[in-house]
Length: 217
Image 1: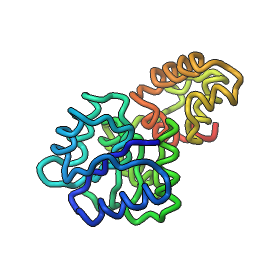
Image 2: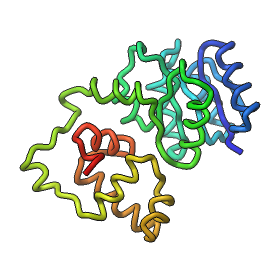
Image 3: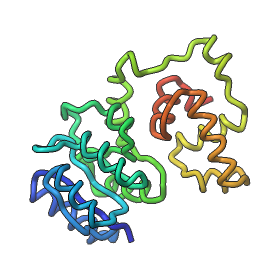
């Protein structure tokens, strides 16, 4: 069962999330934190599998907390709960290493889907948040492929297949099963894709693919 910490500065919201998680059997909430600093202190003694993170909080917000938490626990999965009007750079959050985003206004089914998707090692984006991330990427950070770029960064047919499955939200092990290849081979293709697209993690790879119309090769 997933061990979860809920990080949000509103006690009633934390309580509601906790009840939903435990009533639906999505995991066990082992702690609650009102800001990122408290989360970091908790990570000194607790071993969560998943952190559900607010973005805008006093003392330490979600972006700084994510960066510092993943320095301490690189394997930690972080699901961001957000409002579309949050004054946060979603692209920076993906670079920091979060596993996905879901809106605070989402229904129970989407929230459950987000947790289950991230728990099995894939990434999850609310469609509205994904749209905002893509539309608001800084020009200095987005990479637009022109014909020359495509020529020099041409993907192999197998890399295209792997990329498609990542865009569909499959994990490395699920892709390996689909393609009847080893997990190590999928990881090798993933590394090649990251290098060719100049991206740093699977989430950024998926964003890159969507931004550059590579999700329907």
